[in-house]
Amino acid sequence: MARVRAHDADAFEALYDRYHRLVYGVAFRMLGDAPTAEDVTQAVFLKLWSAPNLYQSGNFEGWIVRITRNRALDILRSKSHGHSELPEQQPSADDLEETAFADIDAGLVRAAIAQLPAEQRDPIRLGFFGGVTHEQIAQRTGVPLGTVKTRIRAGLRKLRTTLEGTVSV
Amino acid sequence: MNTSAHDEMLDTVAVYALGALPEREARAVREHLRSCAECREEYRLLAPAVSAVGISAEACVDAASAGASVAPPGPLLKKRIMQQIRPNVGEMRAVRPIVWPAYAVAAACVVAVLITSIFNTSLNSQLRESQTRVAQLNAHAAATARELNTQRTAIADLLSPDSQRFEVANGYVIKHGSRLYIAMNALPEPPKGKVYQAWTLRQGASKMSPSVTFVPNGSGVAVVPVPVNAASVVAVAVSVEPDGGSKQPTSTPTFVLKLAS
Ligand SMILES: [Zn+2]
Image (cartoon, rainbow over all chains, first blue to last red; front, side, top):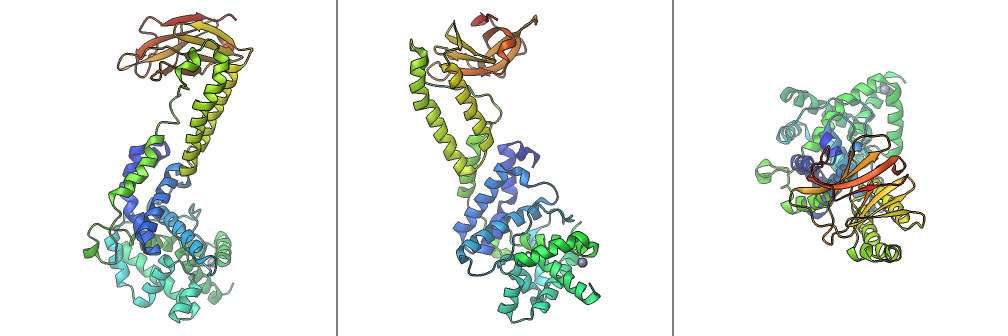
């Protein structure tokens, strides 16, 4: 990232090669169509190039995932024309300390998520990729709001524990 | 906050970490996190799990076999993005000579022709180009603005009636106040691997100091702002040097000009 800050195009290209599948994958998962996901990918990487200082420090993967998700939320928001309430954007420059899983493999995470009970997995996926609030999750699934929240927390905790067992933190 | 109410808060923190709280509630959680160590710890624990959920969506080449995933975008996307990156590389580093058509500088009446030609061709097209690029990329805005400003200053200096113009081989040296320009109108292309380099002699110094390097455009024209306080310079010279410039001249200068102080 230091080299990208210095506007080193080769370093940027390496960063693209390393992370474009992640950015595109998150965008596709949220938006459901390839051209829009490509647009989001392009926007995220051009933003990274033009304003590299948005990334301060900490886990880069987590950061770029948040940036991508926020961008996709913007698009969902513009599509819904303000008719439905969307969750707030995640802070991109997180002032809260976050320990991260170093270089975690997507396949491992998929396996860990698959191990979660469906009642925890579904609201987590819906909340992250669906661009909906916890209230909307409760409405859609017919589960009381308090229960939705408890299940989200339990699922995230379980996910963390499972991943801790497989990768270094 | 009693225990059960705070348990509920911890659940809310998890939903906050997931990014599924509406704006108003999210603000309340952020506020609470500032003052509650327990909830901060909970957030710190859960945030990486949320990042992991995002990472699970990574597109992979063998999408079909990996399940629950998509194929990555094709190489065209990368090409599209890199095309917007590459042309801008290096723009912020080099001192770019301001280049305009040969006839503008070569004309007998430099000043009059400069007004029309520079504004019509060089500055306008560069401005248009820059504006498009800024709009496209929203990048380098500051650098471009600085550059345009430098060019405006240069043009104002070159046109100013109280600028001093000194005729030298292949062009002019122009001094306006503290600013100094080398304006070449018939400069031959330097040999391969070589560039032109400016040199300045400060008042009281015994040796020439190295300054910017430049090459003329296809018409032999180069207008180069010399980054120096012209008021303290008593001589300026140009010589042919290896690409990248030299610490001291390695060839006979194409001109040496003593500036009246
Ligand atoms: Zn608390």
